[in-house]
Image 1 (spheres, one colour):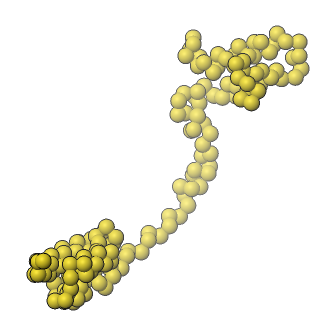
Image 2 (image 1 turned 60 degrees about the vertical axis):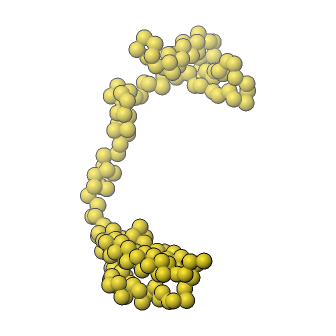
Image 3 (image 1 turned 90 degrees about the vertical axis):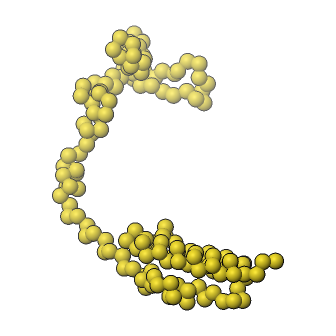
Length: 162
């Protein structure tokens, strides 16, 4: 800030003062920024940019409120609220939390190998993982995952070690 003005404001005032001394006062003065090539140059119209801006909007963050359409904001506020989304319905498989029901779903057999048991664990987790269900049903999904993991771990312990 130079003397209570931003650098941009002081540059605009300097350009305006230079434009007033020119003999071409009828057409707006166009200035090039020195030091930049023609491909990167930009035109700056010499006019007072801040003349139509209120002093309140010159404060940081106030410009938004000056341009806010209060009638539109009131219409949005008065609009009827959308009906709340219906509560999700718990899938049938999440209601089955008894170990016997989960064991039947896993269908662990004596012929299962470590690879087939790992595949069953992944498939069960894909359908039942707590992160994949609505929050209302996470307790049931968590309980199902714990029981399935215990059953699969027990089946792996009983496998013959080679």
